[in-house]
Image (cartoon, rainbow, N blue to C red; front, side):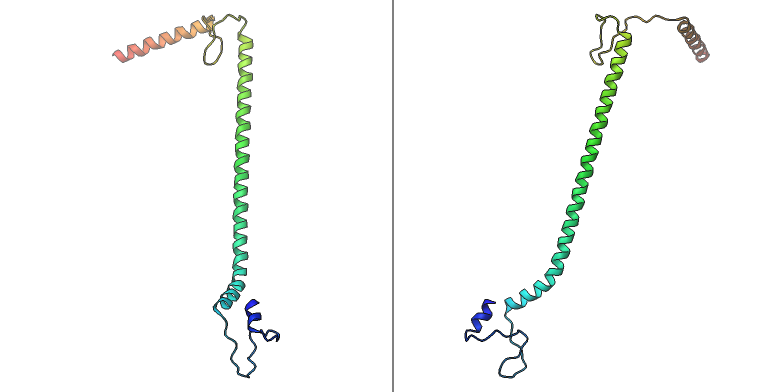
Length: 145
């Protein structure tokens, strides 16, 4: 608007851009390079600008949702790990409670479970062992032939 005001120093009201000059000729007033670029870019850039803005907002929204899903997945994984750890701890305490009557019993450095130094065999265990030995003898004899 300042360039138009500077051109109309005589105090007359500014003319419309498309209006013809006073002398009656039909040619419109020439636009300066800055006027042409600003008017064309503003009308076309508004549509493009809005579209670009929408795309950027959609991209931001997708990124936000992705981060949220990742956060939820991480929290779920952490909860699952914690639950497994608690389950293992419960199981370990159950094992120790039932088998550990003696506090001086040797324990594993890795699992902390009581090390059984001697296992009492039942009649079934002895019968199974004898069956294994018989099978082993048979297989060895069969392979020697």
